[in-house]
Image 1: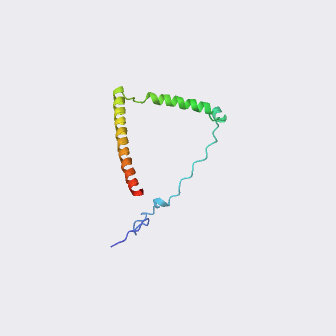
Image 2 (image 1 turned 90 degrees about the vertical axis):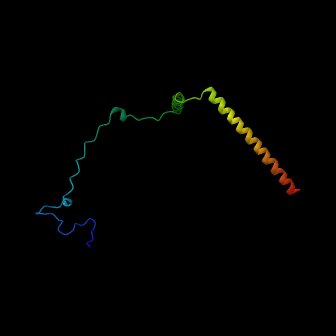
Image 3 (image 1 turned 60 degrees about the vertical axis):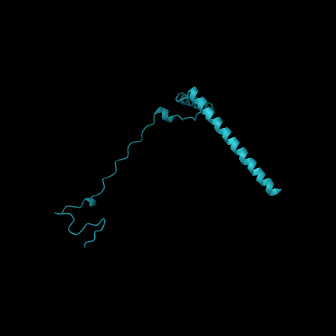
Amino acid sequence: MTKHRRNKPAPGDGPANGQAAEFSKPAPPPPPPSAPRLKAKREQEEVKPPSALSRFIGFLKDARRELTRVTWPTRKETVTSTGVLLALVAISAVYLALVDGILTRILRLIVG
């Protein structure tokens, strides 16, 4: 069996008829450096960072724009969700009261 080596041509794979191998060609010269570009008048002026007031006003505008995209729930959906929430809070309160009462009795028996 013949072993193949990476990056090395096998014997007889070299250039034929005196042609140079493709990898022996010199790299093309780099392009000449371009002339420095003149800056536009706007680029020459210093850009001042926005003030805190203008940033806050921009934030309020963005928030208002975002609120117009919100899909608000209907009155029926809101009432239903509120009812479910109140029911779950009531169930949780009863459960915690029962657990608290049981643990209190157990501790009174242990302590005395």
